[in-house]
Image (tube, rainbow, N blue to C red):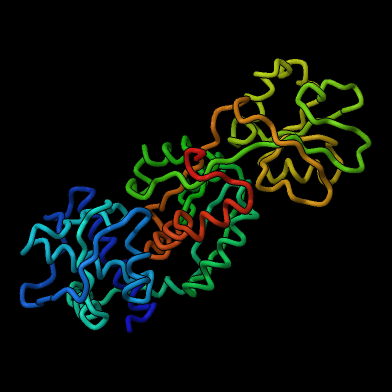
Length: 354
């Protein structure tokens, strides 16, 4: 069987080659094994809806990280038979493509032969560092635990506002994955060539709620209720740094109360701190993310989605990561069925709001 460490080594080498080709530095788009290495397909598989390579690898090879074996075998077969797919990007496969599934033994031999030398992956035993927007902190705590249980790869999160995390990445913070609360901050990193562009994708769509401290002695179930003089403070995340703060601002503007509420507004650094303000009663009311609203100190009302621009959330792998293989595997887990099920449990909708 292909061991997990071998899988990480193989996947890291292949992803480096693929990224070099995408940057125009590698000589050919197809990664071919040495001519003497002949691979016969143990199975021929046609890509179905909701398939991705790691899912297929788990089904046939028993390891989600052995997807690079199918990538390599299929490209080899394409050279001899165009009926097989030619895969340029292992993260992008299409329904109807014909794939070559090698045996476990063939996969191990094929991937070993495709490496030109030993690869130092001692950092793969180090925690994968993930920069994540504060609104996903509850969901991603569970996400990280499940991923580690399945792969053995530890994950450490740094939660904060998407704007502050973007600045940290621009300044060289050694994160492997950026989990943002919108698309714009990931686009900003892409414009500076700081992420692998083929890894950028939507992973969820969020919602905002009006939260009230249970012990505050006030009631608010609509934005107009915030004008009540008994409500002294209203917490929101800083709209300049936090997409959920921007959504709160847009909602209040659309309700026609933004200017009138200026004396009451308490800006927080991120949506997590906004929740803390309401939990402690420092602000009796606040606008927070639905995904972090299930706490005992507050009650909440879901605000209409048409009050603000959609909170589409984007994820990408950072180029400077010392643990690219693990970063790509984690991103794939987040966007796969298990990760999406966890996000749904915390109130997120699927990307695009479908």
